[in-house]
Image 1 (cartoon, helix red, strand yellow):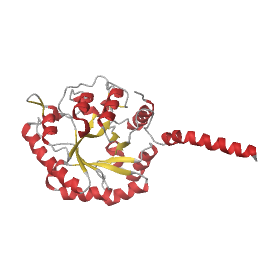
Image 2 (tube, helix red, strand yellow; image 1 turned 120 degrees about the horizontal axis):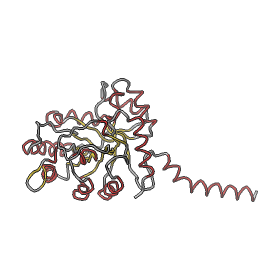
Image 3 (cartoon, one colour; image 1 turned 45 degrees about the vertical axis):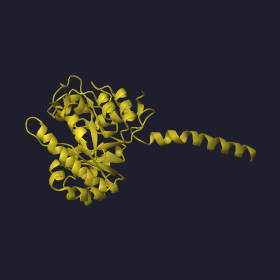
Image 4 (cartoon, rainbow, N blue to C red; image 1 turned 180 degrees about the vertical axis):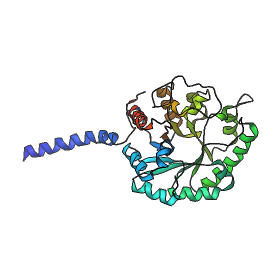
Length: 291
């Protein structure tokens, strides 16, 4: 009996020591330094969703994700897509919606966001001519401030996703600086897409330090070595997306700065045709990176 009791005590102690490790191992993308939370922007698998929604959600789950960011419902109603997410044990935290919807059909966006129980509701692209100009920027500021206030009353946070073209020069800074200054912090947050920040020739670490808590969400993706930067187009060959930790973006200082800034959610977005091999590589990097 004494020996059995001792064995039981040893087993309990070992299990208590292993429990944090088991929990961590079960959380894809979480490691000794990077603590997430991490999700997947479903646009990464857009071609697969167009053919087979249930099968593609199986793939998302098998990759290790439980949280996702939406970008459309691929021919299903919001209710049908929500049912598919539930059936696969996936939760939508955030979603992207068209700019014109925020401008002319905010009630419709709110209805859809409520179907999914979204916490964050955002705009990924501001339509503009060849060049993003001050008038377009100021128009967007007005739309964002209004949408943000209405969404806040519904318990949701509005955000704008950076796409690079916002960094057109303006006075002593850029139009992005104007947007940050004129949108209300109480109602408008921002999602930093690492790729598009670097593509525009900007320093993501400096921007994280400069605007701190305005950055509530982040898209993580690597950039292929040799990709041209300093461009304000918001367009690039999708094959320039590479796994996190590879290519020309230095991730440890960036992730450290994001943590200090208080980024609340991270989403992997891999727009390349090689996502099936690259997304697991990105998760492995996040699980092993140290800073």
